[in-house]
Amino acid sequence: MAAEGAVEDTQRRPTAAGDGCTATRLERVLTSPQVRSGYASLLVQLAALIVLSLLTVRGPRTGRPLALVIDIGTGDAVDSEDGRGSAAAAHPAEAAGAEAPAADIAVVTAPATEAAAVVEQPLVEPSAEAGLPTANAGLVQPVAHRPGAPAAPGAAIEGDPFAARRRFGAGRGTGAGNGAAGASPASDAAVERGLAWLARHQATDGSWRFDLADCRCDGACRAPGTLSSTTASTGLALLPFLGAGHTHTAGPYQETVARGIYYLLSRERTTPRGSDFCEGTMYGQGVTTLALAEALGMTGDALLERPVGGAIRFIETSQDLHGGGWRYLPGQAGDITVTAWQLVALKSCQLAGQEAPSPTIAGIRRFLDSVQSRGGSAYGYRTPAAKPATSAIGLLCRVYTGWPRDDRRLRDGLDGLVRTGPDPQAIYTNFYLSQALLQTDHPGWPRWNARHRDQLVALQGRAGHEAGSWWFTDAETAPGGRLAHTALAVLTLEVYYRLLPIYSEDAVRRGF
Image (cartoon, rainbow, N blue to C red; front, top):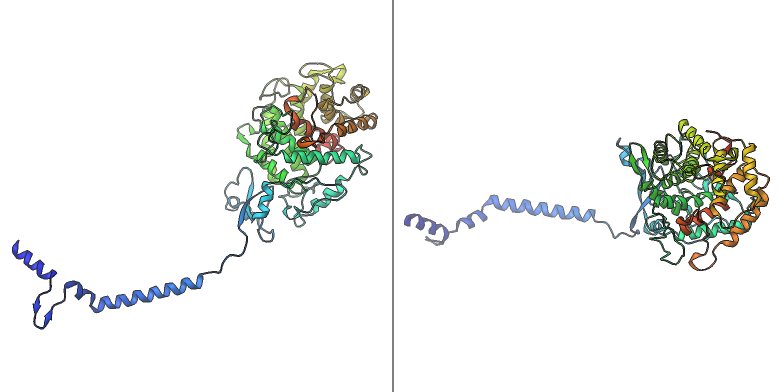
């Protein structure tokens, strides 16, 4: 052990030899020619890397930061610079052969200032006299139109994104242009005020709530509703915008509508029975299906076809097979109000190119037979009766299921409802009766409408946060609160425009 320690010590310490100290082992390694050549090679490589890195350094970024934008209902991704893009960029999974996302949402980038418009809709009150605002003109995008389908009113055409805006302005007109149907400048202005109120009360997630929660109202409006289905409230609030020609592809309220449609699509529950939008009540299913189908019919946006088709399937499989109607839960024995929403939704789907199964329509006729009275000129809620609201609903349903306009039963029923004049507080009755009278070209329509139209305009809120809204002492719609009343009032004043497919003459001329 002592000898080994001595050898190790001589390797660590210098020893005397001849003319001076001998180099340690480390010094011998460092001074060898091989190590010196390695140093030189390393220095050359470091210098090369420094030069290359300097060549790739760019100057400071001068552009604005990009924000995430969700673009609803477009078939193409939008380039942040010039608005051009490709379908492959919009749907990378689809381009790669994978299954596309259920909601068909294209995620693109745009300057941050434009992205803010998607989150916060400007509170503008469009003027019919001043024309359409142009602030959102650059946001109008062509939709994925169905091959071979005719260009629908309000639809943006590929290559001409402003065609929809031109049709919007020409198709709606002012009170003077719609005078033959019954509108007036005052009713047109009331519609605009109503839409502005609805836009102010959209929640931050794109929905509307009957209780006015999660919006800028913050308790400033009285008489909120109590119903909990957010699909029913959102679908009902979207319909007035569509009824004035605003879609997710065109119009001053394009972003408002797009956010609402996105919210509805996000609430879809795919089941073996179809696409469930109920949220606890078939009202939600019917109203949501109607809103999506009307948007599909107005724009031809093929991205809405799948959810609309799934919604039809759920309505079909939720029908009471014995009685033919619908109520709150799938399969329940029906009532006339819930049944009417499903029927109108199915009619809208038919107009948009998606037919409902004929046994479903036969079941609806069977249900109407079971609640009719006076030979078919009056209707009850779940049993035969002759109440105004249910009779107006039943008669309109008969129009949609094929009774001709001059059917004696229709005339008798409508004659009785018109005779007493419009009850200014009965918004649900008047909503359905105005459609039935106009769609059947009833001779009492001009006089009844003049009174009802002016009553609605006079009852619209004009002060504070409630300005532009309505509230009625109507027991039929009380659970829907101010939101439901406002939406129904605006829809009633839009019946003249005939921009909603369900308001068009085709809705009654084309049978199931």
